[in-house]
Length: 487
Image (cartoon, rainbow, N blue to C red):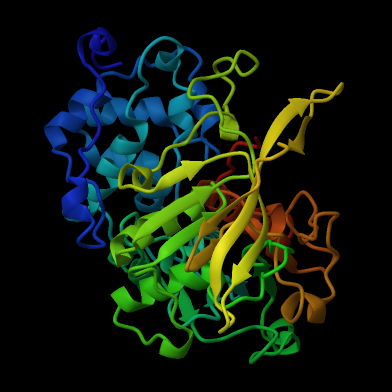
């Protein structure tokens, strides 16, 4: 604990956001650079608690008090080593993680938490700038070959760890660039793609091979995969979107969010987009259905494309702004409190307890209005929320574009999973054992494909844990890879 009175003397101060009227003119990241000397002051706020609840709040079990103190003392090289010991990609989590660690910070009891996320990002970016992060290929090779199917955060984490253990790793990606949701899901204003490319190039220099435009189960048979590799990890994500079964769903102009967001990422990267299927919000009245992160990403993208009006509707009731009485510190409140994205600062109307009942169209078959009704919620005798429609609250809202951001129903089943014949759990995800191995020996699964739709930080944890399972399988029960906390 570098400064015993730091948490009393120093106020929380995070990186400043670029002004709304400025950032809406581009897709650059919205946060300004944060000076190292100010970051060190923020590190001094850490209380070095006897029981660091931030460890429990972080799915990766990051050793947060230690690297807070190291930053305060200016020991950047040690700080990045400690950070990398638990987190494969702090440059990703430092940008897109909702920071459950901060909600578990002891200061959150009656004050503002340590800027853990900001310090994490500062450590890794300082390390890259100063040349402290360089390729570290393994000193030996085992002769074993591993295929990782999917190059999102879970696949990248698994590949990095398996490669570090000395196995030869090939990552298969069906898109034309590696990165999965990091590349073609998260907007650039939250995660610029040079950040992803920088890490991919580092992994390539360490010996990882990436094969893009290779769709296992479509243009690359699963039989060939099983023949050529000693182990396989399935990290293809939960990409089966939840649909809305209401009248008018088939009208032109009603799209899934994940058909909309990747197109803009491709435009910014200078990659081709099929203009016949182009989805643009420019000059349109847009309704986003779904109040989560994907909906907020759509909101920020619509603002930048120059939408006329944007609404974001959520089925559930508006959460409280502060911790409810039944979720006291240090319990992580998850979705139980109101989450406000930077996209909401930029405009649009956000509303809750709305059920979409249908869409109306014009003579050309294009959507022209959303039809909905307001809901009221009450708890039943078991404490579960039950909804009912408010009589007389039906409404119709003019809309030229509707984006469905309703979450995902697990991995896509046709193709790879069907051809492999792996067992699925009750939720339709790949079922695995304690070592992340599926019902097929040598075939593992991790990330959203195993746990369902979740956070990037959980995906990284899953990939690291699955890598341990693969190493054990290939090396007769032994592994050289470090263990993560089992939350």
